[in-house]
View 1 (cartoon, rainbow, N blue to C red):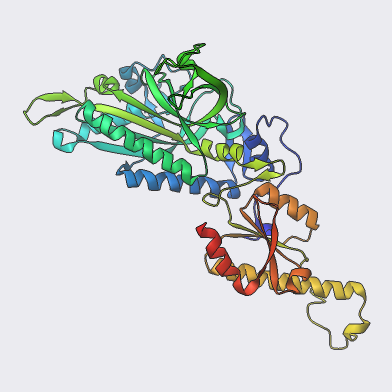
View 2 (view 1 turned 30 degrees about the vertical axis):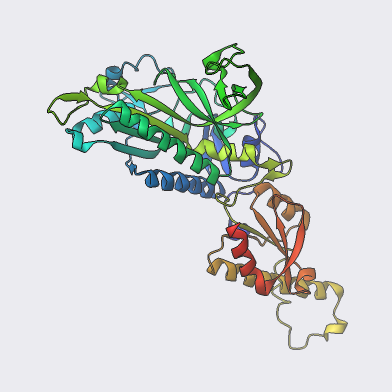
Length: 443
């Protein structure tokens, strides 16, 4: 991608209401545009990151054996009344159709997926079932804040599992936890499993927290059990509920995922049953498991940045390489010598400089084309602006690797190689660049 053609550019100033690192850098870097509080347009750079996060989540859900579906965002009031949550879920967006029918914009989908499974599961032979989706959710947050971490419209992966008995749920549950930890590792995030309340879902739950100063949740830690607890679960207690030991330091965390053992809550509400081996009718047992996909983008920024901008992990970076050309586009009148042009030694310094810049640009574009054709994702800064502006934007956007092409590097048939997470700079021969990139991608 040529930067000159990219829709959505960097900004020197942060939004006035940017109350977190991700809110500042995602807006300044041209990743998102805020439409109103808690609602964002994902610009090309941001959408590339979001899609890569989606794909990692999808790959691990598929590897778990779950099947992907897509449920509607509009949910009938009747289903929410059956589950008893129409009046109890405060963040529920409620709307009316032109014929007066009341509907909800889905913040979650237990009210849709449970009766759906009830239509297809009749026998013990039909179980277990695991269904997931990656879909836009809507929650009427009283105070949307922290950029994409707490929005009113956001993307979420929700997985629902259905089992013949609690023993099968208990067997499946740790498999999901393992898959979640693998997802976070691939995203470059260290997630801590945290015991918490289950809200309207179940008495307790497991949360996956990213420890960060900007986090909203207050957590306590037990050194004996090596486990975190959400303080909404334990209140002001200073004793571990598991071992009775002392709860240590208080830290803040960003919730990036959660898992619940719903058991019979929704199966009872929608009368979802199956026939067992003995011909008896039994209730289906449920679990549900969520990951905030768009929230993960913000969490990655909170976890991986410096004062200059974002430091994207290679797995989700919008582009692997940010190619910086230190030499503007060649002037059309100077790229090719006129028939009666003066000899090289008699040309003015500005004429010689323009020709030199044209040579740099041509060489850089060849590198760009070669890398792109070989499958390397490259954002090429081909603008005719100052080096300082180009380097500043490269740091802000945060691609893992910056390559610089200049007269100085070309004199050595090389490019300047600098990783975003490091201050070290080295020269790499253009002839061996693809080989070096291949090694870099494997690390």
